[in-house]
Length: 519
Ligand code: KIV
Ligand code: ZN
Image (cartoon, rainbow, N blue to C red):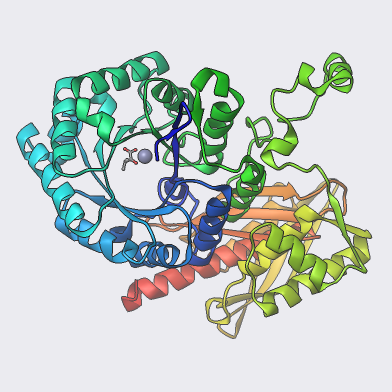
């Protein structure tokens, strides 16, 4: 159903688990992907692009898991325009209640000549053949001419007409490199509707990247000019500078319904929770000033603004925190709170946990409550993520036995560590500009020397010197593979050591699997 009353319905196609997961360093496990997909279903997106099944066995399994376990949205998989990709994609999505195959091939001259080395005619043929093959499996097939915004408009129109004739039910216009300007992109969509009247019979989608910061504005300009689907990612994550942010697109369409005159099916009250979950599972922080979900989005600092908001919120607030599900409440758990309160809180946040995980989280929350009196909701979530991300026994090849860090005025920060590597004790020492730098050097002196620490972030979960420290790191091996890890502890130095060792263990298991040919 595309129309509701006199309003056009715009589909929200969320690609956090596909394009979003292509964000440098944002790799997710199958279980994490499933949790996010379930939360996206609660948010009420129309389509979840769950992954790129041919990319790896892991991607295939994650898409299949989501297709088999997430009800509500269409579950879509990505495939290049060739038989092997399309067949693999269908295998992954076929058990979904509503499956979709999304196939693509680049159409712009630069991609045709430099990447594909194919003529316009060859690409057109491949596009049509891909759509036909996908339609032989599935009633819902999306086609994307990659780099559409740098494609000659006549050729683009010819391709779109041909794929619709071949059975595409959705045509997507990607601004793959984030090159378009809003006015220009809006005009392009309007012109395509004029040149290809068949587009009125299918869903017309847009997929905008944010290289020039225009992804949301371009998507909205397309909606204003007739697009009926927007592809986007939670928190605007994605390749390079990211994709259009789901929450910003949705809140524009909802807050300015008077301007866009369209309907969306999203439950905006789930936005904040979804954003937090994606940030904590991917490790990609939300900037404080990020529209809609940033910490400052509803904070009024200037006296004149505070006065206005106290008189009437509408003076400086165009949407309320409640509309995006930001309750503002923080104190939840005391040392007398039990397993039920913690289970209920985490369930509410979209977590599905085993009994064993719940017991461990409860024990750690109580331990923290003993020290801090109260534990905030974000602390509980951080502890839950820490427990979920725990490496299996088999993966813990390197274990931390002891460490000591010494620092002081006029003294070079120095650290020594005792690690057990497959039962063998190894000692390492290091100095640095600060205690964590020294610790990192001490650890690096023992583990694989080709592993480099390429990213390190510390965040205090809540305020105060006794706050939980959440450390996320990235290690790179000599082939450029990135291993992200995260650890939470009341002691910032311990959290740093744990995160670094987790990353080193991940790298080691990866290397072993590679050598053993398991991957
Ligand atoms: O950016 C892009 O062009 C894509 C396509 C696969 C739709 O992600
Ligand atoms: Zn993309």
